[in-house]
Image (tube, rainbow, N blue to C red):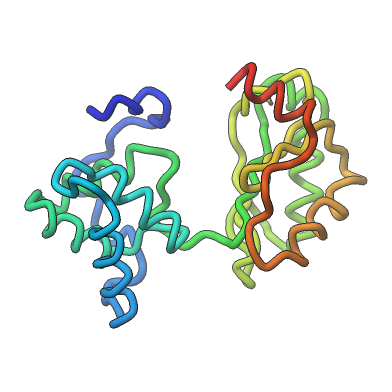
Length: 202
Ligand code: FES
């Protein structure tokens, strides 16, 4: 098991038989093939680097396409089910395309009692989603999570790498607007209090 397992693992390994058709894009384009070869060239000691390879693919595609998992398995000489097991074990990996911005609404106890469910409701309404998921324009993927480690700032929402503390329904639209106008994922938040507490309570 990779040493970062405890940090990333959030759910038990699924049955191998559950891996069928978990991802969407099955055939790589020429550009995809070049990208994968570039990743293999960049990652040192490829044979020992399953997780770094998956991290790099996730960073480039924002998810792990099926063709990439199969290519990684072939490159490492391991069964594709082994690669799927790792890909589904860690919460940092996604087997489905995600939006440009990933929004994590904390529904842990501290956030819940301070109104997080209302914040989530408002967010889903503003993004025209009936439940957490990805918007039709692929701008946002909304997820509910359990405690992001800064309970004193509840209710908390994380967008990409940024922490938004003390969120209310009234602040939701303005917060989303800041991201809707951005082409790339924004840099770390300048909210030092939020980031400091997130570092203290990772
Ligand atoms: S419960 Fe939301 S940050 Fe801890």
